[in-house]
Amino acid sequence: MATVKVALALGGGAARGWAHIGVIRALQEMDITISIVAGTSIGSLVGAGFASGKLDQLEDWVRRMDRWQVIRLLDIGFNRGALIHGDKVFAYARELLGKISIEDLPMCFAAVATDLHSGREVWLREGDVYDAARASCAVPGLLAAILRDDRWLVDGGLVNPVPVSLCRALGAELVIAVNLNDQQNTQVNGDQQPGLLNVVATSIDIMQERITRARLAGDPPDILIQPKLGGIGLLEFERGNDAIDIGYQATMRMNDQIQHELDSL
Image (cartoon, rainbow, N blue to C red; front, top):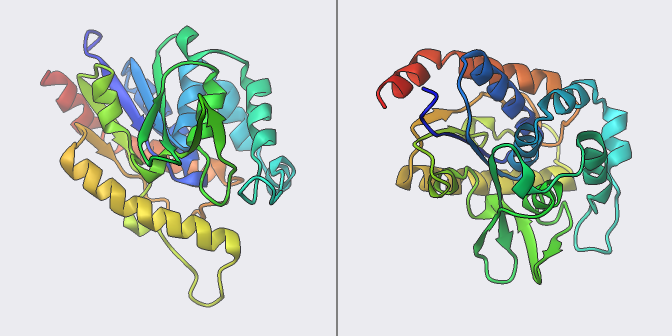
């Protein structure tokens, strides 16, 4: 098992992405060594925390997060092409987890972003790890685009919501993918008109679910974990405890399948 290069492909899904922490905790309990981690959107942020050896600090922060803390970290503004600048939350993440370059991480890490001009998929494999995660998380209309290497970058979920292909390109022999874009997770309350943030976030979620289905059909992972997170809203970042527990339980239920795949290599 120790000689197999196992990769973790962490998909996007806004607040539901805290489930990735529970997935990683379950894999650790199974004594599975992850050699490669690739993330899209929120998956890149959790992946960055894991790859930098700071998962404990990240989990502690997420579990303590409340609604008021979420509001305090949102720097609202309309002058940068989005409702939220996003600088404050990622500066806080860097302060909490430390400044480190991707090249210096103890494991192989990459994040997916989208070139806003060309529409091409961009693999971020060098530079500040949280700058890479910030670019990968730039949900159009919600979080401001990031200028990096003379390109305006936005959410990688527009092109590759669950980066299985990136994991394989990085040399993975077995890919464990976490898909948060399950259609059952997309819910809108029909009794009341949704607000602007929910309309934008849910619309992008619907689009990414379709893209995810097509990408995974063409390049399926060896193991696919799909936590049932429909009860957690896309912007309910304060519900980290619920999301982490759901991710953990979904992964533990797949223990036998995961062990079988590893034993077959």
